[in-house]
Image 1 (cartoon, each protein chain N blue to C red):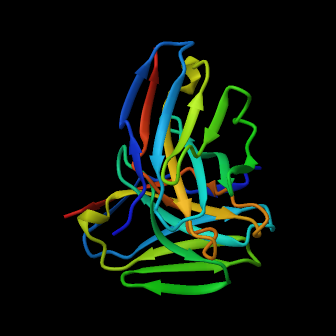
Image 2: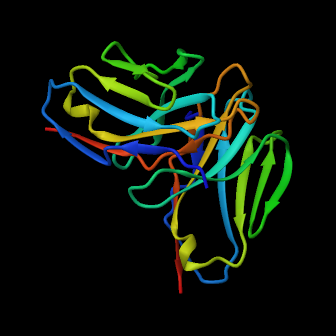
Length: 114
Length: 112
């Protein structure tokens, strides 16, 4: 069964460092998303991406965040200068065009900022 | 008032019980409703997706939506220990916005 894959599964970084989280969405999907879940809290939307541009973003997705689809398969989230409060599980998701809200999630990358 | 409210649980039931999980929402612009299951430290797994009021059944799972009351439910029949997980409701608005708004999740424990 096709799945969304994310790497790494766990990333530890020092405050102020840049991190790149990587995702391979399901191959025939056209919409891509990043969500995050701080430990014990709700899953929160960060950004959606379609046709090589951001289609929607939340208040959380400020200037320190960026997304990119550098090739035909990868989708990345970059955090430029990490803060302690960026520690969370980051989930990538993807959905087909015609089933636009059936989003399938990856297993997540646990980001720990120290 | 939070946009999506979900009974936090935890909910503990014996194996074979019928489980009812519920969410209410305040924003009538929500049109699409999903239930996800999340095991500890894993990604949400899509269980059910619906966009109309009424019931939708898939195996042991039934999703119910009442848009007039802004209330959605997930029923699990013949619950199994493997159903033990956190269940998240999620919803989104019309096709112009795709972001999912999640409930806080209900932790379910099915006792063998």
